[in-house]
Length: 221
Image 1 (cartoon, rainbow, N blue to C red):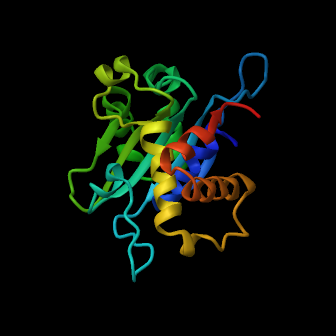
Image 2 (cartoon, rainbow, N blue to C red):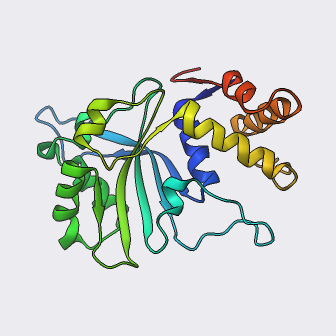
């Protein structure tokens, strides 16, 4: 099967307890000189996860280590999604564009008086953490086909989640370990149902490697 990269990122976050918004658009705050109002940029997937999340109280589903390490704070993720090497695009690294500020204001995660400081931390480090242990962390997360050492050097605290190493193995394990719980999913979109079917086929075959090889992550269908 083929699945769009941003859709796979969205489903990975949803399976890890995030409430998600796809293509969170940053709109202009005024016209250009020609009177047009062009879109500035967008967050591929914006997600919010609450720290006390538990799915299946009888047999709790373990989420990915990247997220369960946060035990006390609400986590907001701004996802950068690509098929190739992980990257952090210019709109999120150039303070002059003020796109980060626009996202923070539109999301309303923190009071307006804190936005400039939060944006500065995200531009510089890719993460902002509230000093209060039970408050909030806002971070950039990269999804891609391979690790990018340049991103790792510039943003060592930005997770790089690789399709074949992190995302697809997690999806397979969730759908396999909790096959009975997840099989009633008529309300899911078609791509998620296809993922579940591919995991089911691989479960009856050679397992996780078969699943990872069977799912092709693409930027367009």
